[in-house]
Amino acid sequence: MIYKFRVILDAEEDIFRDIAIDENDTLEDLHNSIVNSFDFDGMEMAAFYTCDDKWNQDEEIPLFDTGDNPGEGLTMADYLLSSTFDKENTKMIYVYDFFNMWTFFVELAAIEEAEAGVSYPDLLFSHGIMPVTAPDKEFASEKDDFGNEFEDDYDEEDFDMFEGDDSFEDYGFEDNWN
Image 1: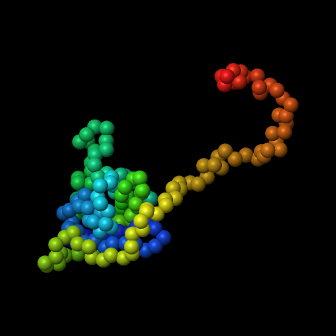
Image 2: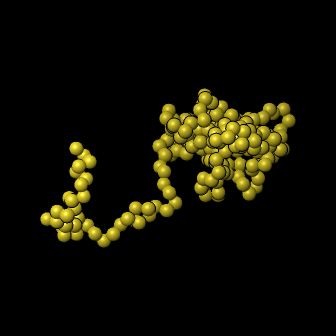
Image 3: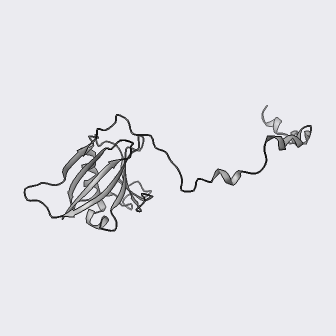
């Protein structure tokens, strides 16, 4: 069977590629197809990330083994597309070049029979021109209330009660700065 993916750059503009690839290929093969279809040089690190239906990132699948003990970690080459994607698991996040953070949404769009005379992987459709630099990333947590944990009902005027109280200067901290 042939897996047809839409790979979308995480950017304001619509920039995507449709790629057809054999189900027996690996995530590394899909990585190479993405690199070629977006005209990257392929010299940077990359990783796929499993995610849920709302694109919340989960497990990392790196291009190379980055674990503490070589040979113990699984890489893209260890994951067949047929065992990674199915009708329920259609999405992954792909990041190329961790310095620039080119981020893509990879979604399985169809599973079809191979067409006679077509060699795979195959770039089916290309839309949009890649920007010169990667779009800026906004890193936000699910819960954006971290700062609220430290909020209280005090403002600057409430600290006036400490004016004239010299007891705070008596800890000897000044001696450490000389």
